View: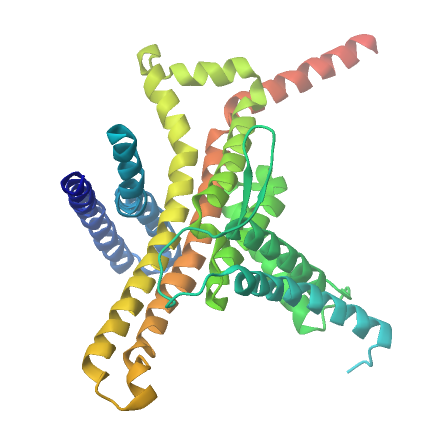
Length: 93
Length: 303
């Protein structure tokens, strides 16, 4: 029982950590978007407002995949261990 | 300055109370129901009451009550700002109210076009409630937007609005839009349609929630660090976490204020883009032109 609980807790923590690897993608994507926005503002300073609002929108959409990973990680840390332990306890009974 | 009548002042006071009392009530509820702890805990919304229902018991959580309090408070704010309007604005609050309305109109006009001007109140309302819900965490209360259920409710509302806009030219055209550009894409299109509300809800919830979690983690880490470094101080001084002063406040400016404002703006912006993007404008205008044409013809024939 203790061993099984330990494996559940450890694997939940490991899974949360692995899920957050997805943070790399939005990081690179948003960096690219901001770099291009800076270039665009440098080329056309008068379009600064429009470029900035478009960039923020794009960043928000690019962030979505990272946030999916974050939600999965939060579920794995705070919700999954107790529910898995409940399942285990029922199985042992 | 013109002297205001006593009645005006009394109504003003009433509106101010309407603005502040819900927040005080939310704090009182939190104080009454919160369990004592060391102040550092990461948990979802607290359940205040459980209402028995036929199918499933309905829990009334902190998130729901807080969002109702925000609604009442924003209502009071609107009443206060629009109290005693004049044709020529001469008070600060009227200038502020006019500025807000003008900004909303400008935003909708820029992003959706003049045809969709009727959506302005909805966009303004959703922006205001999202903004004030996120800013509620500045008062030490649970921000309703860091509960998935509240934000998912708004996202479902927006999804209904998008679908209504897409169905404007009849359900047949709406169904046909799933088979474009080729009928093989049907499952993909259905998935991407369903992903819209999910991604909207998760984006808002994830941003606010992650900010709250990181703030709590940082402050608890600072507490233990100061207990380790400054624990040798005599008496009560050793128990006070000195390192916790100031640093979490800087994080709060980013996570609560900046992120809350940004997410409110993004939620409203995405609503506008999806609604105006989903509306079948060409077909609508073609039908309208046809309708006018045939109507004119009919009139001519009868004359």
